[in-house]
Image (tube, rainbow over all chains, first blue to last red; front, side):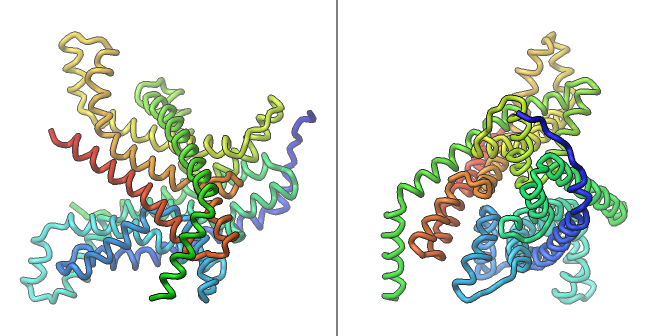
Length: 221
Length: 229
Protein backbone atom coordinates (compact mmCIF):
# COMPACT_ATOMS: atom_id res chain seq x y z
CA UNK A 1 0.00 0.00 0.00
CA UNK A 2 1.48 3.30 -1.06
CA UNK A 3 1.38 5.99 1.58
CA UNK A 4 -0.57 9.22 1.28
CA UNK A 5 1.03 12.33 -0.23
CA UNK A 6 -0.28 15.67 0.86
CA UNK A 7 -0.88 18.13 -1.94
CA UNK A 8 -2.29 21.38 -0.65
CA UNK A 9 -2.10 22.94 -4.12
CA UNK A 10 -5.47 21.49 -5.04
CA UNK A 11 -6.98 23.47 -2.16
CA UNK A 12 -5.33 26.78 -3.11
CA UNK A 13 -6.38 26.27 -6.73
CA UNK A 14 -10.02 26.00 -5.64
CA UNK A 15 -9.78 28.36 -2.69
CA UNK A 16 -12.11 30.92 -4.28
CA UNK A 17 -14.70 28.21 -4.97
CA UNK A 18 -14.51 27.07 -1.34
CA UNK A 19 -14.88 30.57 0.06
CA UNK A 20 -17.65 31.25 -2.45
CA UNK A 21 -19.39 28.11 -1.18
CA UNK A 22 -19.01 29.31 2.40
CA UNK A 23 -20.47 32.70 1.47
CA UNK A 24 -23.37 31.02 -0.32
CA UNK A 25 -24.08 28.95 2.79
CA UNK A 26 -24.12 32.08 4.95
CA UNK A 27 -26.37 33.87 2.47
CA UNK A 28 -28.82 30.96 2.42
CA UNK A 29 -28.76 30.86 6.23
CA UNK A 30 -29.53 34.59 6.49
CA UNK A 31 -32.50 34.35 4.08
CA UNK A 32 -33.81 31.24 5.85
CA UNK A 33 -33.50 32.96 9.20
CA UNK A 34 -35.52 35.90 7.86
CA UNK A 35 -38.29 33.59 6.63
CA UNK A 36 -38.07 31.54 9.81
CA UNK A 37 -38.40 34.62 12.00
CA UNK A 38 -41.50 35.83 10.18
CA UNK A 39 -43.14 32.39 10.37
CA UNK A 40 -41.95 31.81 13.93
CA UNK A 41 -43.22 35.18 15.09
CA UNK A 42 -46.64 34.69 13.49
CA UNK A 43 -46.93 31.18 14.89
CA UNK A 44 -45.89 32.35 18.36
CA UNK A 45 -48.65 34.98 18.40
CA UNK A 46 -51.13 32.42 17.07
CA UNK A 47 -50.08 29.83 19.66
CA UNK A 48 -50.66 32.27 22.51
CA UNK A 49 -53.94 33.59 21.07
CA UNK A 50 -57.29 33.07 22.76
CA UNK A 51 -59.04 31.58 19.72
CA UNK A 52 -58.70 27.85 19.09
CA UNK A 53 -58.96 28.57 15.36
CA UNK A 54 -55.53 30.21 15.58
CA UNK A 55 -53.97 27.96 18.19
CA UNK A 56 -54.72 24.57 16.67
CA UNK A 57 -53.32 25.08 13.13
CA UNK A 58 -50.16 26.79 14.39
CA UNK A 59 -49.62 24.00 16.93
CA UNK A 60 -50.06 21.36 14.22
CA UNK A 61 -47.62 23.13 11.89
CA UNK A 62 -44.97 23.57 14.58
CA UNK A 63 -45.25 20.05 15.96
CA UNK A 64 -45.20 18.41 12.55
CA UNK A 65 -42.29 20.38 11.06
CA UNK A 66 -40.12 20.31 14.18
CA UNK A 67 -40.16 16.53 14.10
CA UNK A 68 -39.10 16.09 10.49
CA UNK A 69 -35.64 15.30 9.15
CA UNK A 70 -34.72 18.46 7.21
CA UNK A 71 -33.14 16.45 4.37
CA UNK A 72 -36.49 14.78 3.67
CA UNK A 73 -38.18 18.19 3.49
CA UNK A 74 -35.47 19.48 1.16
CA UNK A 75 -35.81 16.54 -1.23
CA UNK A 76 -39.57 17.00 -1.15
CA UNK A 77 -39.21 20.66 -2.11
CA UNK A 78 -36.67 20.03 -4.85
CA UNK A 79 -37.78 16.71 -6.37
CA UNK A 80 -41.50 16.32 -5.57
CA UNK A 81 -42.93 19.84 -5.78
CA UNK A 82 -41.92 20.21 -9.48
CA UNK A 83 -44.12 17.18 -10.26
CA UNK A 84 -47.03 19.15 -8.85
CA UNK A 85 -46.21 22.16 -11.00
CA UNK A 86 -44.20 24.11 -8.43
CA UNK A 87 -40.72 24.60 -9.83
CA UNK A 88 -38.06 25.98 -7.51
CA UNK A 89 -34.36 26.49 -8.15
CA UNK A 90 -31.76 24.81 -5.94
CA UNK A 91 -31.12 27.86 -3.80
CA UNK A 92 -34.82 28.70 -3.44
CA UNK A 93 -35.61 25.12 -2.40
CA UNK A 94 -32.99 25.23 0.34
CA UNK A 95 -34.05 28.66 1.58
CA UNK A 96 -37.72 27.68 1.61
CA UNK A 97 -37.09 24.34 3.35
CA UNK A 98 -34.76 25.68 6.00
CA UNK A 99 -36.99 28.74 6.47
CA UNK A 100 -40.06 26.58 7.10
CA UNK A 101 -38.07 24.25 9.36
CA UNK A 102 -36.51 27.12 11.33
CA UNK A 103 -39.94 28.76 11.56
CA UNK A 104 -41.20 25.78 13.54
CA UNK A 105 -38.18 25.83 15.86
CA UNK A 106 -38.36 29.60 16.34
CA UNK A 107 -42.10 29.51 17.03
CA UNK A 108 -41.31 27.57 20.21
CA UNK A 109 -38.48 29.97 21.08
CA UNK A 110 -40.64 33.06 20.56
CA UNK A 111 -43.59 31.50 22.34
CA UNK A 112 -41.41 30.81 25.36
CA UNK A 113 -40.10 34.37 25.27
CA UNK A 114 -43.66 35.75 25.01
CA UNK A 115 -45.00 33.67 27.88
CA UNK A 116 -42.15 34.85 30.09
CA UNK A 117 -43.15 38.52 29.84
CA UNK A 118 -45.10 39.52 32.94
CA UNK A 119 -48.76 40.37 32.26
CA UNK A 120 -48.38 43.70 34.02
CA UNK A 121 -46.25 45.06 31.19
CA UNK A 122 -48.99 44.66 28.58
CA UNK A 123 -51.53 46.04 31.06
CA UNK A 124 -49.32 49.05 31.74
CA UNK A 125 -49.20 49.68 28.00
CA UNK A 126 -52.97 49.52 27.75
CA UNK A 127 -53.47 51.75 30.76
CA UNK A 128 -51.49 54.56 29.13
CA UNK A 129 -53.89 54.33 26.20
CA UNK A 130 -52.05 52.23 23.59
CA UNK A 131 -54.13 50.03 21.30
CA UNK A 132 -53.59 46.25 21.46
CA UNK A 133 -51.65 46.37 18.21
CA UNK A 134 -49.36 49.14 19.48
CA UNK A 135 -48.84 47.35 22.80
CA UNK A 136 -47.70 44.28 20.89
CA UNK A 137 -45.50 46.21 18.48
CA UNK A 138 -43.93 48.76 20.83
CA UNK A 139 -43.92 47.06 24.20
CA UNK A 140 -44.09 43.29 23.85
CA UNK A 141 -42.00 42.70 20.71
CA UNK A 142 -38.81 44.47 21.86
CA UNK A 143 -38.81 42.64 25.19
CA UNK A 144 -39.60 39.32 23.55
CA UNK A 145 -36.86 39.82 21.01
CA UNK A 146 -34.28 40.45 23.70
CA UNK A 147 -35.46 37.42 25.67
CA UNK A 148 -35.21 35.28 22.57
CA UNK A 149 -31.85 36.56 21.33
CA UNK A 150 -29.57 33.80 22.70
CA UNK A 151 -31.81 31.06 21.29
CA UNK A 152 -32.14 33.01 18.05
CA UNK A 153 -28.36 33.05 17.72
CA UNK A 154 -28.14 29.30 18.26
CA UNK A 155 -30.82 28.80 15.63
CA UNK A 156 -28.79 30.85 13.16
CA UNK A 157 -25.69 28.75 13.80
CA UNK A 158 -27.59 25.50 13.35
CA UNK A 159 -29.23 26.93 10.20
CA UNK A 160 -25.79 27.72 8.82
CA UNK A 161 -24.69 24.16 9.59
CA UNK A 162 -27.85 22.79 8.00
CA UNK A 163 -27.04 24.60 4.74
CA UNK A 164 -24.59 21.72 4.22
CA UNK A 165 -27.64 19.56 3.40
CA UNK A 166 -27.88 21.56 0.16
CA UNK A 167 -24.97 19.41 -1.07
CA UNK A 168 -27.62 16.68 -1.38
CA UNK A 169 -29.32 18.56 -4.22
CA UNK A 170 -25.98 19.75 -5.70
CA UNK A 171 -26.12 23.39 -4.63
CA UNK A 172 -22.52 24.59 -4.91
CA UNK A 173 -21.99 25.48 -1.24
CA UNK A 174 -18.97 24.55 0.86
CA UNK A 175 -19.83 20.90 1.47
CA UNK A 176 -20.63 20.26 -2.20
CA UNK A 177 -17.46 22.05 -3.35
CA UNK A 178 -15.38 20.03 -0.89
CA UNK A 179 -16.90 16.77 -2.04
CA UNK A 180 -16.27 17.75 -5.67
CA UNK A 181 -12.61 18.55 -4.96
CA UNK A 182 -12.15 15.42 -2.90
CA UNK A 183 -13.53 13.10 -5.58
CA UNK A 184 -11.93 14.93 -8.53
CA UNK A 185 -8.42 15.13 -7.09
CA UNK A 186 -8.43 12.26 -4.55
CA UNK A 187 -7.02 14.79 -2.06
CA UNK A 188 -9.44 13.51 0.59
CA UNK A 189 -7.38 14.62 3.59
CA UNK A 190 -6.69 18.15 2.43
CA UNK A 191 -10.22 18.84 1.25
CA UNK A 192 -12.09 17.55 4.32
CA UNK A 193 -9.62 19.04 6.79
CA UNK A 194 -10.10 22.38 5.05
CA UNK A 195 -13.89 22.10 5.15
CA UNK A 196 -13.92 21.17 8.84
CA UNK A 197 -11.61 24.04 9.72
CA UNK A 198 -13.66 26.51 7.69
CA UNK A 199 -16.90 25.40 9.35
CA UNK A 200 -15.48 25.46 12.87
CA UNK A 201 -13.86 28.87 12.37
CA UNK A 202 -17.07 30.33 10.91
CA UNK A 203 -19.28 28.90 13.66
CA UNK A 204 -16.90 30.16 16.36
CA UNK A 205 -16.77 33.61 14.77
CA UNK A 206 -20.58 33.79 14.55
CA UNK A 207 -20.92 32.68 18.15
CA UNK A 208 -18.45 35.37 19.36
CA UNK A 209 -20.25 38.01 17.31
CA UNK A 210 -23.56 36.89 18.82
CA UNK A 211 -22.36 37.02 22.42
CA UNK A 212 -21.04 40.55 21.75
CA UNK A 213 -24.45 41.50 20.36
CA UNK A 214 -26.19 39.92 23.34
CA UNK A 215 -24.11 41.99 25.73
CA UNK A 216 -24.89 45.17 23.79
CA UNK A 217 -28.61 44.51 23.67
CA UNK A 218 -29.07 43.11 27.16
CA UNK A 219 -31.91 44.69 29.11
CA UNK A 220 -30.20 47.13 31.51
CA UNK A 221 -30.85 46.45 35.17
CA UNK B 1 -63.51 12.09 -4.02
CA UNK B 2 -63.49 8.85 -6.04
CA UNK B 3 -60.26 10.05 -7.66
CA UNK B 4 -58.70 10.53 -4.23
CA UNK B 5 -59.89 7.10 -3.11
CA UNK B 6 -58.52 5.38 -6.19
CA UNK B 7 -55.14 7.09 -5.85
CA UNK B 8 -55.11 6.09 -2.19
CA UNK B 9 -55.79 2.43 -3.02
CA UNK B 10 -53.18 2.62 -5.76
CA UNK B 11 -50.70 3.94 -3.20
CA UNK B 12 -51.57 1.27 -0.64
CA UNK B 13 -51.03 -1.44 -3.24
CA UNK B 14 -47.67 0.15 -4.06
CA UNK B 15 -46.69 0.23 -0.39
CA UNK B 16 -47.61 -3.43 -0.11
CA UNK B 17 -45.44 -4.21 -3.12
CA UNK B 18 -42.52 -2.25 -1.67
CA UNK B 19 -43.02 -3.65 1.82
CA UNK B 20 -39.83 -5.76 2.03
CA UNK B 21 -37.75 -2.85 0.75
CA UNK B 22 -39.30 -0.36 3.18
CA UNK B 23 -39.04 -2.72 6.13
CA UNK B 24 -35.38 -3.48 5.51
CA UNK B 25 -34.77 0.29 5.23
CA UNK B 26 -36.56 0.89 8.49
CA UNK B 27 -34.49 -1.82 10.18
CA UNK B 28 -31.28 -0.20 8.87
CA UNK B 29 -32.42 3.19 10.17
CA UNK B 30 -33.23 1.75 13.57
CA UNK B 31 -29.93 -0.12 13.68
CA UNK B 32 -27.92 3.00 12.82
CA UNK B 33 -29.85 5.19 15.25
CA UNK B 34 -29.67 2.78 18.18
CA UNK B 35 -25.98 2.01 17.75
CA UNK B 36 -25.13 5.70 17.33
CA UNK B 37 -27.15 6.62 20.42
CA UNK B 38 -25.53 3.87 22.53
CA UNK B 39 -21.98 4.70 21.39
CA UNK B 40 -22.62 8.43 21.64
CA UNK B 41 -24.06 8.09 25.14
CA UNK B 42 -21.19 5.95 26.41
CA UNK B 43 -18.52 8.30 25.08
CA UNK B 44 -20.54 11.39 25.92
CA UNK B 45 -20.82 10.37 29.58
CA UNK B 46 -17.10 9.60 29.76
CA UNK B 47 -16.18 12.90 28.10
CA UNK B 48 -18.63 14.76 30.34
CA UNK B 49 -17.03 13.28 33.46
CA UNK B 50 -13.60 14.20 32.08
CA UNK B 51 -14.81 17.80 31.64
CA UNK B 52 -15.79 17.91 35.31
CA UNK B 53 -13.08 15.88 37.05
CA UNK B 54 -10.20 15.78 34.56
CA UNK B 55 -6.89 17.57 34.97
CA UNK B 56 -6.20 20.81 33.13
CA UNK B 57 -4.79 19.22 29.97
CA UNK B 58 -7.46 16.50 29.75
CA UNK B 59 -10.20 19.08 30.23
CA UNK B 60 -8.76 21.28 27.51
CA UNK B 61 -8.43 18.34 25.10
CA UNK B 62 -12.03 17.23 25.66
CA UNK B 63 -13.26 20.82 25.41
CA UNK B 64 -11.57 21.18 22.02
CA UNK B 65 -13.08 17.88 20.88
CA UNK B 66 -16.56 18.97 21.96
CA UNK B 67 -16.31 22.43 20.38
CA UNK B 68 -14.90 21.10 17.12
CA UNK B 69 -17.49 18.31 16.94
CA UNK B 70 -20.28 20.81 17.53
CA UNK B 71 -18.90 23.28 15.00
CA UNK B 72 -18.85 20.82 12.11
CA UNK B 73 -22.24 20.14 10.47
CA UNK B 74 -23.52 16.58 10.79
CA UNK B 75 -23.30 15.91 7.06
CA UNK B 76 -19.70 17.16 6.90
CA UNK B 77 -18.86 14.85 9.80
CA UNK B 78 -20.36 11.95 7.88
CA UNK B 79 -18.40 12.79 4.71
CA UNK B 80 -15.22 13.38 6.72
CA UNK B 81 -15.44 9.99 8.39
CA UNK B 82 -16.46 8.33 5.11
CA UNK B 83 -13.63 9.81 3.03
CA UNK B 84 -10.88 11.01 5.39
CA UNK B 85 -11.01 8.68 8.39
CA UNK B 86 -11.62 5.73 6.10
CA UNK B 87 -8.46 6.65 4.16
CA UNK B 88 -6.46 6.70 7.40
CA UNK B 89 -7.91 3.35 8.47
CA UNK B 90 -7.11 1.80 5.08
CA UNK B 91 -3.51 2.99 5.29
CA UNK B 92 -3.10 1.78 8.83
CA UNK B 93 -4.82 -1.59 8.55
CA UNK B 94 -5.80 -2.20 4.92
CA UNK B 95 -9.40 -2.61 6.02
CA UNK B 96 -12.16 -0.48 4.49
CA UNK B 97 -14.99 0.51 6.81
CA UNK B 98 -18.48 0.12 5.37
CA UNK B 99 -20.58 3.23 4.69
CA UNK B 100 -22.93 2.12 7.47
CA UNK B 101 -20.10 1.93 10.00
CA UNK B 102 -18.78 5.35 8.93
CA UNK B 103 -22.24 6.82 9.32
CA UNK B 104 -22.72 5.33 12.77
CA UNK B 105 -19.33 6.64 13.89
CA UNK B 106 -20.11 10.14 12.61
CA UNK B 107 -23.55 10.21 14.24
CA UNK B 108 -22.04 8.89 17.47
CA UNK B 109 -19.38 11.63 17.47
CA UNK B 110 -22.14 14.20 17.04
CA UNK B 111 -24.21 12.76 19.88
CA UNK B 112 -21.20 12.30 22.18
CA UNK B 113 -20.34 15.99 21.97
CA UNK B 114 -23.92 16.99 22.86
CA UNK B 115 -24.13 14.47 25.69
CA UNK B 116 -20.72 15.48 27.10
CA UNK B 117 -21.93 19.09 27.38
CA UNK B 118 -25.21 17.96 28.96
CA UNK B 119 -23.42 15.78 31.51
CA UNK B 120 -21.01 18.56 32.44
CA UNK B 121 -23.87 21.03 32.80
CA UNK B 122 -25.97 18.69 34.91
CA UNK B 123 -23.18 17.81 37.34
CA UNK B 124 -21.95 21.39 37.69
CA UNK B 125 -25.50 22.66 38.23
CA UNK B 126 -25.74 20.65 41.46
CA UNK B 127 -25.08 22.75 44.56
CA UNK B 128 -21.65 22.22 46.14
CA UNK B 129 -23.38 21.49 49.41
CA UNK B 130 -24.42 18.10 48.03
CA UNK B 131 -20.90 16.69 47.80
CA UNK B 132 -19.84 18.55 50.95
CA UNK B 133 -22.69 16.96 52.87
CA UNK B 134 -21.54 13.58 51.56
CA UNK B 135 -18.01 14.29 52.75
CA UNK B 136 -19.30 15.45 56.12
CA UNK B 137 -21.01 12.13 56.79
CA UNK B 138 -17.84 10.29 55.83
CA UNK B 139 -18.58 8.99 52.31
CA UNK B 140 -15.66 8.25 50.01
CA UNK B 141 -15.26 10.06 46.67
CA UNK B 142 -16.72 7.09 44.81
CA UNK B 143 -19.68 6.80 47.16
CA UNK B 144 -20.41 10.51 46.80
CA UNK B 145 -20.42 10.21 43.01
CA UNK B 146 -22.52 7.08 42.75
CA UNK B 147 -24.96 7.67 45.60
CA UNK B 148 -25.27 11.46 45.70
CA UNK B 149 -24.22 13.16 42.45
CA UNK B 150 -25.14 10.75 39.63
CA UNK B 151 -28.71 9.96 40.70
CA UNK B 152 -29.48 13.68 40.73
CA UNK B 153 -27.54 14.49 37.56
CA UNK B 154 -29.25 11.72 35.59
CA UNK B 155 -32.66 13.24 36.29
CA UNK B 156 -31.40 16.47 34.81
CA UNK B 157 -29.92 14.80 31.77
CA UNK B 158 -32.68 12.36 30.81
CA UNK B 159 -35.17 14.72 29.11
CA UNK B 160 -32.45 16.44 27.01
CA UNK B 161 -30.85 13.09 26.29
CA UNK B 162 -34.13 11.89 24.81
CA UNK B 163 -34.24 14.99 22.58
CA UNK B 164 -30.78 14.27 21.26
CA UNK B 165 -31.91 10.72 20.49
CA UNK B 166 -34.56 12.30 18.25
CA UNK B 167 -31.84 14.37 16.57
CA UNK B 168 -29.89 11.18 15.86
CA UNK B 169 -32.96 9.71 14.12
CA UNK B 170 -33.20 12.86 11.99
CA UNK B 171 -29.49 12.49 11.27
CA UNK B 172 -29.86 8.95 9.93
CA UNK B 173 -31.47 10.40 6.76
CA UNK B 174 -28.08 11.95 5.97
CA UNK B 175 -26.67 8.44 5.59
CA UNK B 176 -28.65 8.24 2.34
CA UNK B 177 -26.02 10.57 0.84
CA UNK B 178 -23.26 8.01 1.38
CA UNK B 179 -25.64 5.33 0.01
CA UNK B 180 -26.45 3.43 3.18
CA UNK B 181 -29.72 1.66 2.30
CA UNK B 182 -31.74 3.18 5.16
CA UNK B 183 -35.42 4.13 5.21
CA UNK B 184 -35.15 7.35 3.20
CA UNK B 185 -33.25 5.54 0.42
CA UNK B 186 -35.92 2.82 0.45
CA UNK B 187 -38.62 5.49 0.12
CA UNK B 188 -36.82 7.15 -2.80
CA UNK B 189 -36.38 3.80 -4.55
CA UNK B 190 -39.97 2.76 -4.00
CA UNK B 191 -41.23 6.16 -5.19
CA UNK B 192 -39.15 5.98 -8.38
CA UNK B 193 -40.10 2.36 -9.07
CA UNK B 194 -43.83 2.85 -8.59
CA UNK B 195 -43.71 6.35 -10.05
CA UNK B 196 -45.73 7.69 -7.11
CA UNK B 197 -43.80 10.55 -5.52
CA UNK B 198 -46.05 12.77 -3.43
CA UNK B 199 -47.70 9.95 -1.50
CA UNK B 200 -44.45 8.12 -0.77
CA UNK B 201 -42.77 11.28 0.52
CA UNK B 202 -45.81 12.11 2.63
CA UNK B 203 -45.74 8.55 3.96
CA UNK B 204 -42.06 8.98 4.86
CA UNK B 205 -42.85 12.23 6.67
CA UNK B 206 -45.55 10.49 8.69
CA UNK B 207 -43.26 7.60 9.61
CA UNK B 208 -40.44 9.90 10.71
CA UNK B 209 -42.94 12.08 12.56
CA UNK B 210 -44.31 9.12 14.50
CA UNK B 211 -40.81 7.98 15.48
CA UNK B 212 -39.34 11.36 16.39
CA UNK B 213 -42.45 12.78 18.04
CA UNK B 214 -42.87 9.51 19.89
CA UNK B 215 -39.37 9.93 21.29
CA UNK B 216 -40.19 13.52 22.26
CA UNK B 217 -43.37 12.47 24.08
CA UNK B 218 -41.44 9.74 25.87
CA UNK B 219 -38.95 12.41 27.00
CA UNK B 220 -41.77 14.59 28.32
CA UNK B 221 -43.22 11.62 30.17
CA UNK B 222 -39.86 10.98 31.84
CA UNK B 223 -39.52 14.65 32.70
CA UNK B 224 -42.94 14.70 34.34
CA UNK B 225 -42.12 11.58 36.33
CA UNK B 226 -38.82 12.88 37.61
CA UNK B 227 -40.15 16.31 38.51
CA UNK B 228 -42.88 14.91 40.70
CA UNK B 229 -40.83 15.25 43.85
